[in-house]
Structures are given as structure tokens and as C-alpha cells.
Length: 428
Image (cartoon, rainbow, N blue to C red):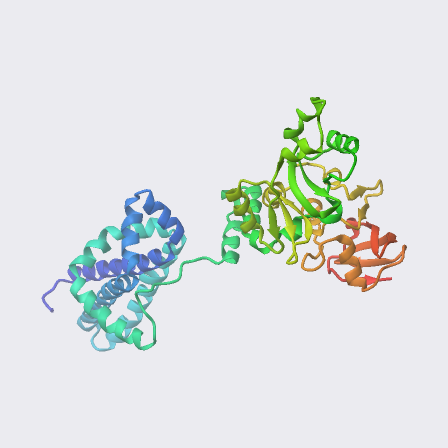
């Protein structure tokens, strides 16, 4: 060793530090790769992504290879540094060489390459696979031996190395990915995607038209009244019943009645012939399930029934789609018939207004984990039927009871402009 020129030793030391930086950066770069972007690039036949995916299939082998190479070059660099120190400074130079080499490796072979690899993992990891892939083949017996020993200790801890890390995202994690996508996904599309994730949290009970608001055809009415109702209907589909909405016998599509009015022999029997069979939906059905049911059954409307078979309301395909894409009208106060905008900026809200619809259209934040209607929310909070003039702070919104009748709040006034940020609730 004494015959080796100084320049050769210094060159070898410099080269080993570069190799150490390569192994350190490669490890961090490959581990820092976005697994979902990597899968996408691999499917598009990106060569670097394909090689990286193969290496990451067995992370124990990859880590074994990198650490084997990194430790080898670091130990060899330490040995060369020791030879240089003994040659020129004697035994006291060993400590100096150890300190200097530690500082050099820490800065140039650890911190710097790993930082660069974290900031630009693809630009660091993909080229590195050109060296690591053939190196793994060349050193496979040694890497295999190291892995056998290391994996033996890992199995003692009850961990199966072949399982790999769990890369499945939970719903909340996926929502976080969507919301943090920034400019990559338009804000409107982000909202739609998060609404899709929330579909299974919402049931048909939350968005249905309640039974007392159902518009339908009563076959017990006079034929002239039925014709008048059909002529003035604002709906394309109407339930048909006898006497009571619990006795629904079918669904009538308005387009099927166009020829009926031109026939002199038009009658209820002809109306019944044009009906479709009613489609019933159990209460509590999640919206994601019901959306698939509508698709499979080729339906656009369903009647929500409870466990006793009584009709509770009506849900449509459009209602579910609005939960995803939002309302189809631009003016919320004209879309929700229960909302009446006042000149002073306040709103008169009918007690029958659906809370989820109010939140979605008006961009309010009323609680939705309890009653479904605005009246129910007020009475649940007050635990009594309020008198007109009663004021309360509901979820931070100032609310005043305007009219109460028949054991429910008929009309209440809300002023969202004065909402309290602390969401405190009080009543007077």
C-alpha cells in the first residue's frame, strides 16, 4: 500500500464518495416515488418506471443491495482515508481522518444527495435503475444471503416481508389527495370527486321528497280534475294512487299521456294502461347503492318505503346526480321553493325545507346528523314547539320563529350574514 501514489489514493477516495452518494440518493429516490404515479407511468411503458416497479416489487432485495453497496464503499473509503492519515500524519492522523471523512460523507454522500432525491425522486431514481438492475443480477447470491439472514430476524417479529407495505388509500386519504391536487384538478372537479366519496354516507332518506309533498294522481278524483292536473303538472313522472299515497299502483310518464287528451273515449282505464310498475326503495339505502340500482333497473324514480311498507317519500336519479354535480340552476332562492329571499338579505325558510338541500344550495353549514327538515332541527334543539317571535342561535346562525302551527314550525327567518364563527347555540 505504501507504493500506491497519492493521486491514485485520493482519486479512489473521491470516486468512493461519489458511489456512496449514488447509493444514498438512489435509496431515498426510489422510496420517495409516488406509487400511484409510478404505476401509471409503468402502464404507459415508461422504461425507467418499469425498471423501478420491478425493483420495488421486492423492497427487501432492493434495500439489501443498496445498503450492501453503500456500506462497502463507505468502509473502503474509511480504509483509504486511514492509509493516507498514517502515511502523512502518523497515528494522530487517524482521528483527524475519521473526523474529516465523517463530515465529508455526511454532507456530500448523505444529506445532499438524499435531499435532491426527495425533491426530484423521478429524476434521481429512474436513471439509477440503469445501474441497480444489472448490479442486483450480478450480486444476487450475496444479496440473497443477506436477505435470508435479515428476513429471518424480521419473521421473529411476526412480519411477513412478502406482504409489502399497504398501499391502499382509505376514503379520507383519497379525499385528501383530491383536495391537495391543486391546479392539477379544477376546483369544480375536486368538489364532484369528494361528493362521490361521500355518497355512501348519505341515504335516500336524506334527499327524498317527503310523502306530504308528493305530487301524484289520485284515481278517486273526478276525471276532469285529473285532466286538469295532468295539463298543469310540472313533473315528467307522477305516482298514481287510490285514495292514499300508501296505495300507489304505478308511475305515469307524462309523454305517454299526450295522445290521451285527443281521444274522445279517454278515461281512467286508459290512464292505467299507460302506467309503469312502481319501483320501491328501502329506507336507509346509501346513495351509491341506489345509483347502481337505478342503473341496473333502468329507472329514474323510486318510492322510499319503511320496514312496514308505508311510503315515506320519493327519490329520483336527478336528486342523486345533484349530490355529485350540484344544483342545475344558478339562483338557489328560486330553485328551492321553501326559500324566500328578503330585501334586507335575510331568508324566510319554510319548516319543511330539507336541511341537506339548504346546505348544498345555499352553502350553509346546518347540522345534518339529526332531523331532515328545518322545522325538525329547530324543535329538536329547543325540545319544544316554539312560539312565534322566539329567537335562537342555531349552529351559529341567528334564527327567528315567524309562524308555528300544527305542532311544527311553519316559517322561520334566518340571517346568514351574521353567523357566529364559534357556532355556539343559544335561544331566547
